[in-house]
Every structure is written in structure tokens, then in C-alpha cells.
Image (tube, rainbow, N blue to C red; front, side, top):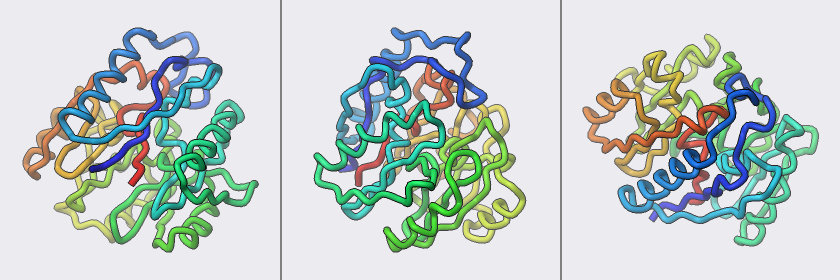
Length: 266
């Protein structure tokens, strides 16, 4: 059974502006956010069959709810995030404490490197893709490749609205890819085209890309994604995937959706 880490949105809100989606004047609705987050947990547990584990929410850390940015876990090792923005750096020790308590071998990158966890490092069984420029440094991937003994191909993210790789890139369990090409520079698009066959790549339309269609959670043949992405869902259905749309617009106000709210523990 797949396991995911989540954090209740008890203290979630727009308290600062560190990406183009965030505006303090466009505050999230706390009741709606809690309802949407609860619905997401129910879909994951009851319809997808995931086992969920939970972080304790902490006051004054509104983005702790986005557990994808806790770090990267693989083979019993955990590399915690080292956030670029001071507003999120207070989260780091809580994620490290959780990893340690759960028995992971915690390995830190060099302290001058910024790296934002599974928000920027995703991939397929035989190779991983690392996003850089917006939040994570390209130098992180040299160390991460050595730690996890994985081939990691860095790709440059060029649109500030899609500041993490997981906002525009979603590898699927069958080896296919959902992605939003304008977020990547020309070289990165060439790299992706060289490793993933054309009939396995789906370039989401702009309207759905901007609803974070790629910020989806894929578990086996299930894909949990934001509502309002009919073309993406139709392509997934043709590929034999079962889709689970969930309304998550309160979290989009902070630049996050389904994938940002979860961290794979397997």
C-alpha cells in the first residue's frame, strides 16, 4: 500500500507573497480550505487506497501544509529541503524531526545549496528529473545523484508562476508524462523529448496547465487532480487511468494543489 505524508491546514493562509499566485489581499477561506483538504484525504484513502500519515500543524508556518516540499525520501534515506525563502525556512527542523522520528537516515546537502524536495525532484523508476532556477539550485542534483545512486537530469524552469517542477510535470505509473511545455526552456524540452516517447507525453492545454493539471497525485492507475481539467482527464481515460477530480482552489491561491499537499513515503 502506498503511503503519503500530509499536514492539516489548521494554520494555512496567505501570510506573505513568495510566488506570483500569492496575494495577501486574496486571502484563503479557512473553512473552505479545511473542507477541500478533508475531501482530498477521503479520496486518497477511500477511493485510491492510500495509507496517510500526518504532520502536526505549527502556528506561523502556513505553508507546512505543502508537504511535498519537506524533502525527498528513497530507500530509507531522507534529504530534507533547504528553502530559498526565509519565510519557509522555519519548516525545515519540523520535517527533519519527523523524518528522524520515523527512522529515516537524514542526509543534509551542503548548507549553501537551496533545494525544495519533491516539489522539484520527480521521475520514473530508471531516471529522475530535477527542476532548477526558481527555487532549487542545479548543484543540488550532483549531490542527490550520489546519495540516491540515481541518474538525475536537471531541467530549467523559466516561468515564475510554475516555480516548482511538480506544478508543471507529472510522471505517471505507466511511464507516461503530463507536462506543461512553456514552463521549460528549449534545452529542457529537448531533454524530455529524448527520454519520453511522443505518444507517452501529453502537453496539457494552457487553461488546464494554469489550473495546475500537472500538480496531480498518481498511485497505480489512479490520478487525483484539480477540478476543471477535462482534456487532461480525457487523455488519462484513454490510457486506462481512473481520475479523481477534487476542488482545491483555496490552495491554488498559495500556488499549490493536490501534489503539493502530499509527500510520497515509499
